[in-house]
View 1: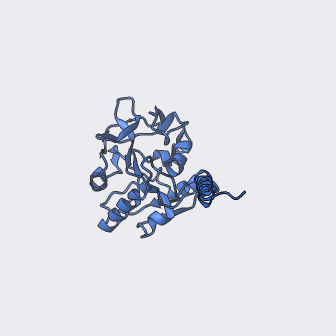
View 2 (view 1 turned 120 degrees about the vertical axis):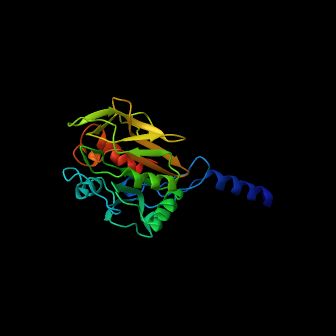
View 3 (view 1 turned 90 degrees about the vertical axis):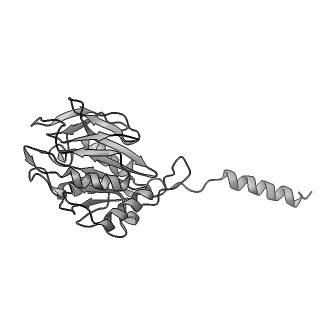
Length: 250
């Protein structure tokens, strides 16, 4: 006996709605170009890591070693590039842009590229040095960038911890970024103040914020008032897990 046409069509519709497509898993390096937000919007960025050395980027010579940072990420399967400017396709190629202690204003065109990158679901991680016993960082330029990006954080060249050996700070849970981690290792830091929706990730013993996080739509910004997690303290505490999470936990 033949089924009515409408019955066959209904059966097919239900089957299509219930059947999912193949799950290819995360992209190389743990990135994911199609992570959905709770609102249903989709991240449309690449999976690579860009180490930005422009805008006068640098730091203490004992700490500032971009090649070592590149090696760290490559060893974990990420595609990594170093550049002194932001390429026009930065969002197409990368999930994470690391600003390596810029000490000058970023060009207006690069600020615009970062705004687009964040709107598409990218993450910007900022590492800044102190101005205490010698001056190696420049918070004014970063604070101007934060204002342009809508970030509720203010960087300060002083404060933080004054220890001259590696110190581990307790990490406040900010999932999924900090999932499975408990300690941030730092050495002689600057500090950060937060407001609005910015979240504290780690504080020094005196209560000063040393690491903070803020979601901005699909994207996010992470600020660290120290470059030692990329250098001297890169293998201490839970720094390896935190650095990797910057590039693959969104």
